[in-house]
Image (cartoon, rainbow, N blue to C red; front, side, top):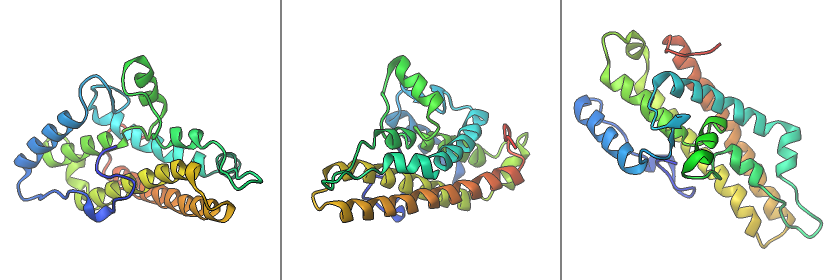
Length: 214
């Protein structure tokens, strides 16, 4: 994913200087091209930077997190055996987009079926549309870009940190309490990401963004 390693903090993410929109649009395009070549899946389909698909991906990603934090599903991914070892967390990591093939038809399916996979590209696509401020796209003028970026940065950080936690418990050496504490922290991260997604979706709804689904 774009922007963070699981151990980084939201303050380490890049910020855009809205005073120079043209340079920012160019920089965003270059960064996206370098980090995400044309062959892997972008915004639900290979190479796609479609604004409607990106906004739908944001909505679907929020639903995926709500599904993950559901009590039955959460308990399935947070098993600790009698010897103080964590069970498989691959299912949770797939939902978070942390386990996905990088190329080929499998990558296409991952992008279409796992909304959190490369959610950062959806954020970049929306951000670029706002910065371009096309006169025909009146919804962009109604968007609070600064708040959108804050929410995007925090969502990326929290989902990556949650994915990192689900990975790290497999190697935890201090038994049940340590693993349980990690799972508790992880659930907090996921719940915060859900709240941030909900606020972001409200921004898009209020702005009458294209492709928004009630």
